[in-house]
Image (cartoon, rainbow, N blue to C red; front, side, top):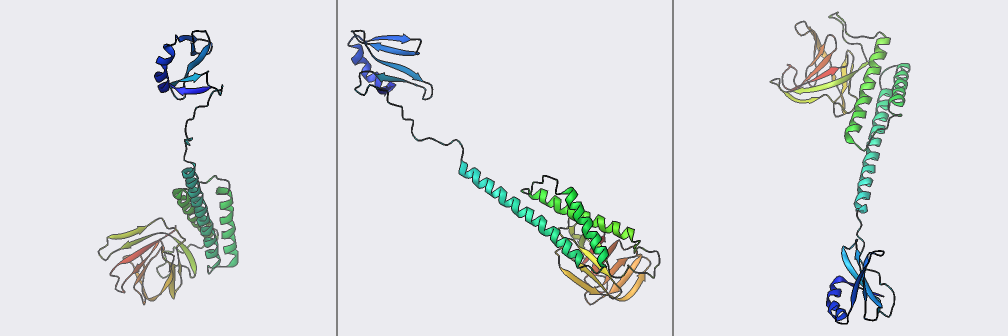
Length: 288
């Protein structure tokens, strides 16, 4: 049986109807059937809902079977290649951010081990830090594919370390904030820096770094002050010409690289570019 589209039907309709072709509607099969003068069905047409057109089937064709309609190549409704590339990119971002968090944890632990403190104190801090991670991060479904979520986790790690150090300092009763003007912060004790602000010589803020991505600290003793910058660079300044300034409630020093001011309560340390306390300066704010 040969199937011919409606366009072809128009060209042959005059031929059939010239030979007394009779059209009847078959409600059972929902089609129009065509019969010759002898009463034999010679073909029928049926509406194809998929192609939205009438199709004619010739029953006189020698093949005596319907020819399937060719709809052309199948068009994929979704671009699976694009979807796959998107998922791969998301997975790569997840893996990269997860590795960043792991590296930050390892960096913090290694940094604690390098502190000039007794082994027992360092061990306590590390164990408390690991325990906090286990309780607060391991059981959470964190979307490391998100950079914002990853930064939030890193910020939590730094805040947690700061809280642990404050607690440990309190337990040991090692508070360097004294009212005695002749006392300085305790020697070789590490203090966590929470914020760094850069000012120019006129006192205008050039850069404020409150969201420190790496642990930043200050270690003080009578001869030098060691500290880590916001970029993670470890450096120091020697301390000479110590003098207490009652107007500023703190200690003033000079060094080979510029003056230093240490607040009496050790809430902040200021590093100047010049020894006359002029030029640009950086204020390091200490965790309370």
